[in-house]
Amino acid sequence: MKILNLFLLRYFIRILSLCVAAFVGIYLLIDFFEKVDHFIEFKAQAHDYFIYFSNNIPFIFVQILPLAILTSMVLTLGGLSRSNEITAIRACGVSLWRIVQPLMILILSLSFLLLLLNEFIVPWNSTQLNNLLEIKLKGKKKLQLTRNEIWYRNSNQIINIAVANIQKQQLQGIKVFTFDEQHKIAKREDAAGVIYKDDMWQTDSLTVRIFDPESGDLVKTSTLSDQSLEIDRKPEDFSSRDNLKNELNFRQLSSMVKKLENEGYDSTRQRVDMHNRLAAPFTCLIMGFLGVPFALQRGRNSNIALGIGLSLGVGVAYFILQSLLLAFGYSNAIPPFFAAWSANFIFLLTGIWLLLNVRD
Image 1 (tube, one colour):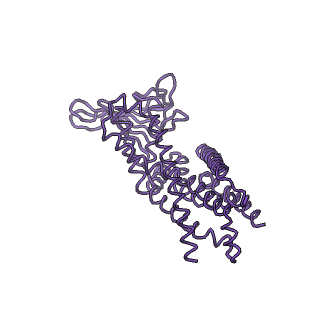
Image 2 (cartoon, rainbow, N blue to C red; image 1 turned 90 degrees about the horizontal axis):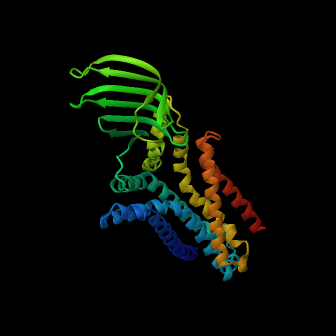
Image 3 (cartoon, rainbow, N blue to C red; image 1 turned 45 degrees about the vertical axis):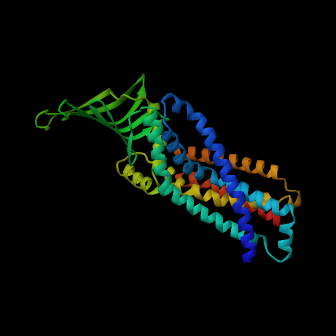
């Protein structure tokens, strides 16, 4: 059995390596051509290109590995089936599960590898990419994200935003600190929420605190209704925040959810992202399992081109379903846990049903 396991693993790893290299290369090429205008426009230097490629590859790897595993499983078992090697192995009394067992153990190990990458490596790579693309090349002021809170500086102001909902053009938990020429705090403005209307941020209630310029003591507090708040950014300027959330791992998202809920803010999006951090790596296991019946359904009539096309089609279907479920989760239409895990569960059931048909 050790010889059989080594044979299957070597065959599978060789095909998986080729699939990963091909998918990463295609993804990186397309992504680079989408952004090359920015590199040329802002006169990027050679080391900027190196930073982009070196930090983008791990991020791309975790995105394409499930599809690469599905394609590799289809090509591996399909190729062995075409050459009657699967038939010969099963004629020796080896069950189908015993054939795929070493491959599934390897895929499970890769799932845990992705879990570690998402927790420790990818957030750091995302930080480097955001700094390069948004700040160094585009010249935008840095949005500092701390447990989902956005901090940035504008002239003599420091602005803190607890939650930014770009789709609804709303901000929650806004604090604007205004400083004088001696860098002492002069005014603080607080609003529970603002909405972007008529090219300005408007709030129903604004609390204004005025401080003494000499002592820094609070001298006046007033609450105003139906006010506009001076924030120098439009809703689309906070779109980079969606990239910033990739800088957070599961533990940071979990802390963020607790903090937002304790402060009375809506943490639905963050809870969905938190569950998705755990669900996404195990897509590899689901895709590997799903590849078994797809590869063996046609036996000797397996077609490599058809297998690749089928794998890509299944990958696209999974991506569409997962994106749809996450959108439902963000809008609070379904619980965050089900939004993150339902696609895996649906495709797992599909794989079981197809595998039972193969055995029959």
